[in-house]
Length: 332
Image 1 (tube, rainbow, N blue to C red):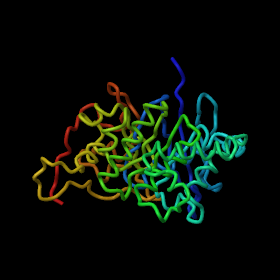
Image 2: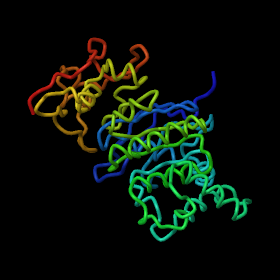
Image 3: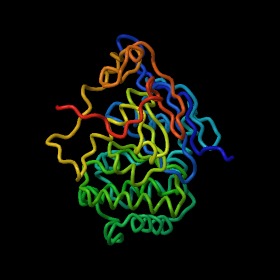
Image 4: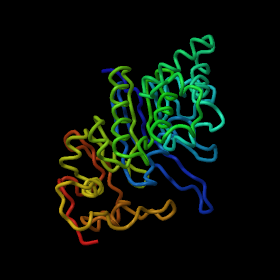
């Protein structure tokens, strides 16, 4: 069997506070194969972006990263900056959440795409760089790329800026693309166009994609597997189909129950009760227990280990007895 393209084992990210170091991410395992799409889902603060920024080597220096991050069989956790720079943008790329802040407002779109190409291909001439940049704009469905090449980010719509950010990310045909909330604040039509671009790039270039999102609909439509994170830990992980149809972790079931449905005639949408724990106030035992309708005393005393159930792994003391198609809904 071939090695995974990305293999994360026991990843932990700790943040120094007045009360000592606090774990924002703890014991996260994650793999992605070549050409595969994996969704990372969970509420804000669950550790999705933090985990992937650790992979990119882009976390601030005062954060401590430990565990193992192997890319194409090579350990990169704690790798020197020079080594990471040779990977970033060339073999691993990231589409950041807000395209307006990801783009330089005083540089033209063409200059920013060309800069990424030249950075990893210093021997290319100016004409070759421009030709490749125009081809990239065309590949992400930017109309009239010759005219758009000399325009600035403020002259583009939100959806077009997001496509430009994708063009910059794929400029050097990376093997792994990390997309952090790539459809945030876009209308559903533009969301569909962005997802179509990802699907096409995957098919044409064989890229693996990590899709960080709150939108379970995107995961259902594009991803092969998914990992559900809660309070910096993996709650459930497995192929998209089985996880969607028969979730075993109450948190996963709650996320799925909160997705609006055209067949749903309820007056109020379901919402998971309570809020995620803050960094310094993680409860003992299972972090989800205070919000869980199925918690028993053991859940509040002992942190559950990840156990395999068929094709999925679940961190829940009651996973063996729970197969939750829908979480029972309560009045808000």
